[in-house]
Structure formats: structure tokens, C-alpha cells
Image (cartoon, rainbow, N blue to C red; front, side, top):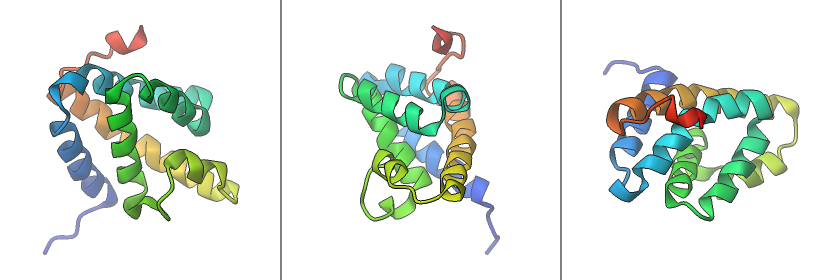
Length: 127
């Protein structure tokens, strides 16, 4: 059995998630994928997650994306709470920075697969 890196495992999980996005959610889901890294880098992880939660109230694609992101970066759900709740109750900066790094690593794969599987356009995400 070959050993797989964390990045390979993450890529496989994200590929599976993006492939299963429903037709009616593809545009919003792709938009969320394309904007994730720039938003985290400019506004921070907590603000980005809060922004996506507001969008998720109106758009099912954002809700699906948040669910998938949480599943990817919090295997097992870390005590069953949402990613937003985890960030609110994060006890130290090291854990917060580690989660930010995991989300940014995932963002690379979400963007790649959104471009290839959902035909998401990076120019459209800048609107």
C-alpha cells in the first residue's frame, strides 16, 4: 500500500465533493471556490467563513460549499460544531493559524477542480 500525502488525500476528497455538486448549485459553488483563497488572505479566515454563512442563507451553492469545506478541513467535524463555531471558540493562535493553513491548502484544490469540473471562471469571481 502506497503512502499518500495529506495533500493527495485532500485532493481526492475535494475532487469527490466538487464532482457531486448539483446542477442548480454549480455557479454559486464555483464562485465560492474561486473566491476562497483571496478572501482568506485579505480578510482572514473568521471573516470569510462569516461572509460565506450569510451567503449560504440565500444561496444553496454556498451552503453546500461550506458543508464540504468543513468536512474537508475538520474530519469528523471536531466535536460536531460548525467551522464558524470552532473558530469562535478556538483557544489559541497556533490552532487558528493551523486551520487557516488547512483552508488555504484546500482552497488550491477547490479552485483547480471548480475550473475543470464546474467550468468556473476566475474572471467571473472578481465581480
